[in-house]
Structure formats: C-alpha cells, structure tokens
Image (cartoon, rainbow, N blue to C red; front, side, top):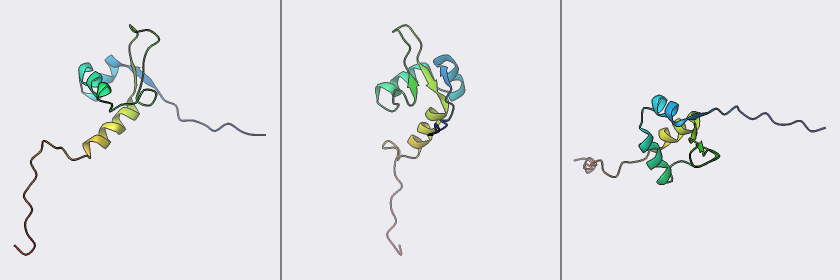
Length: 86
C-alpha cells in the first residue's frame, strides 16, 4: 500500500496583505511579475476572474527576493581592482 507524501502547507495571501508584509507597493509586485521574476503557481496565483485579486505565497516570494539580492547590481559602480602587490 502506498502512502501519500506530505506536502508543506502553502498559504496564499491577497496582494493587500502581501505588500504590507513585504514592504513593497502593489505596482512593484505587478512590475516584477511582468518582468518574469515570479512564476505563477509558485510565487502567486491569479484569481478566478480578471477582477479577482492575485494571491501570494509569502514564503516563496521572500525566498525569491533574497535570491535576487544576491545577484550583482549592474547599476552599482564596481570598485577598481588593485593589481597584485600594488
């Protein structure tokens, strides 16, 4: 007899609650979705209709933001490299 694997409980919250917890605006979340930074079904779920609010998995979104912060910022000036022994 096979037993079902337990899956971690995922709580999806509406955008209004997500922006308070994450400290970003709803337009920022929308922009990040349009830029492809978040994946539907992983980081968020769309509502049943176009008027339904998007719901967010805060844990997955926070993990993704942490990953993105580790990437080099192309707009940040890089410190000049010192030659060895110089």
